[in-house]
Image (cartoon, each protein chain N blue to C red):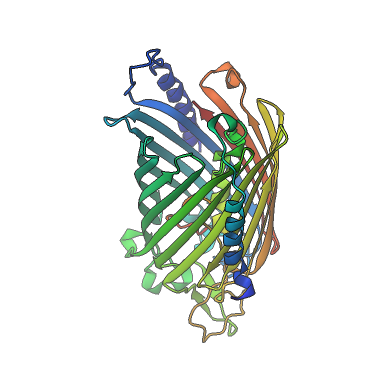
Length: 402
Length: 74
């Protein structure tokens, strides 16, 4: 953990050095600056803690206590290319470290097993070429994610077209993720010691692939109102069950979770932002979701930034969520032995949830701490309550440098 | 169409209504639209929030974020 904190401090220091060396803007009206420059840097750190009593690792009963500390940095760089197109490069790097009491129950014979905690790293790289004259942009992206038992490679392409009057933008994004999961069974269900996740004990892997097409359409309605429509079509294939999650049946027998090898998800959403008067903004969001595992969900949220002055805003927010249960879900000891697919993961059960919190945004004219490039800082807190007893708190600090 | 799929109908209906009421806005009239709080994307500070919600809930997507990759199984 100390190492993650030191890395974050090193990132801050490196950032100031980078800005200190950036070229000053040219004052010539004919000269086009083609130098690569840093447009924006974002640092996001968050602390997340949850507790509940329906752990899927122990068959739908037992502690869900989990703590996660996440740090990420993203850089946006750009330069003018040969045909006067804007070439943008995005570099992201994130590190999450979590401790999970339920993961520790994969092998409850140990006092604290290696699965009690893990660190995930996830770098990504993107490139976008924008033709301002034609109002279009095209880009590619690649990502990687690694944790103890899971590796993910992602690739994507995107295209966007802006209308002549710049009031409308249509975007399409195609993404694929090729994941590899090391199979780990609960200790009592490992045949001849296999599937422990250790290479020296016959470590075996299995794929999980995701393919998605995302469409977006944003539209300016009037001087104070704009909306965006979002549609994703997502298909997942491979091992979609979590092999170290236990399921208990009506006859008291025990198996590992088993779910279909395919899942089609279709979420459709709308964002609507309205500037009310001179100080209040309404940020609304609604999403409808359905999939072929039997889950239908509605999400609605409203955030209301209030500008205390031009440099400081306070934004209370509330999010409501409701979902039906997957047809494969049943609680502890309720599955029939004849069921083909079964899970006791309460993330797939019927529930409602409420998320409430506050976002503070500070954008002083002379920069945060009088550092010109330190343009904004945000502090966000949210409390999450799920109708089946799970609750969590999340605290996030985000800093923007321009 | 089943009642539970009402959302599929609702969003296109809103879309239709919205396009009917659009008025042209010139660049110099965009002082409200260009405000940082008016951005039609999730805040940077929502990054971890969106991530935990996609793990703890059956639904995900249609928020301009990631659509796959990583297990999120804890």
